[in-house]
Amino acid sequence: MLIDTHAHLNFSSFKKDLDEVIKRTLAENIRVINVGSKYETSRKAVEIAEKYEEGIYAAVGLHPIHATPDFIKKRIEPEEGGFLASGEDFSKEKYLELAKSKKVVAIGEIGLDYYYRPKTKKKIEEFKNKQKEVFLKQLGLAEELDLPVIIHCRMAHQDVADILKFQISSTKSQKNPNFQNSKLRGVVHCFTGILAEAQEYIKMGFYIGFNGIIFKLDLDEVIKQIPLEKILIETDCPYLTPPQEEDKRNEPIFVKYVVEKIAGLKNLNYEKIAEVTTQNARNLFRI
Picture 1 (tube, rainbow, N blue to C red):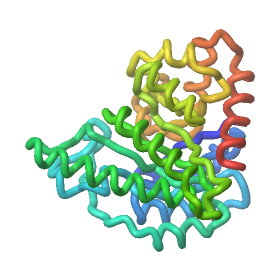
Picture 2: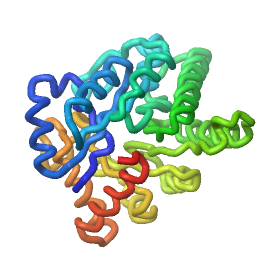
Picture 3: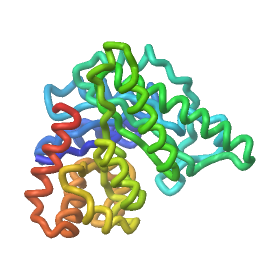
């Protein structure tokens, strides 16, 4: 068994053949966590998960890009087809309602994204502060629900790490009995940082998620050096298709190529990587 811990079958790219994609995914003994990026896609992720008795799960959350669209007046990810960020004010109540589903296993994807940003210093500061504000609110929601978080981080590792440290120390110092046994946990998905940054997240108890980006960026040393027990595998489909399927839309069955790459780098067999990363996902998401 493999667990694709970060997919977007809830996106429009799969609108025409969603059932067929899920059918072949489950037939290959692959389980999937569909991850929300805003309320609409989070709701869709829950709807999809609830159609299946097992094997398909959901995460709900507000992506930083959709939390700050007023600062970005351009198409995002043009190399992947492009889309315009849609504005949304984070509503704790709406996401709490979605999280009532037993199929919701995480809050995500949430975090910080400084890749697309405004031009002036003042606007950049406002842009970053808004993202941090929404990030903190969702970390609080995850702790309240005792759910792990799926973190999106691009060009913002220091700020993400600082916020996680703050939230962990703040939670530990709270006198509210509802938080006494709460521990912030999760995964930094689609990791693109350096080894020291990965080690810092691991020290805080987080997992590191790898997908097809490992075929585009040189993350070999990071993968070699960090413990297999802290690695999760994912596709981030429909994005980041591995080169073995270069001209195709990415989908969960292609997560096997990520496993193969990690196995080669760690000098372990495919079955070992599959076994440990699957158990890692089970441990984190309680599935």
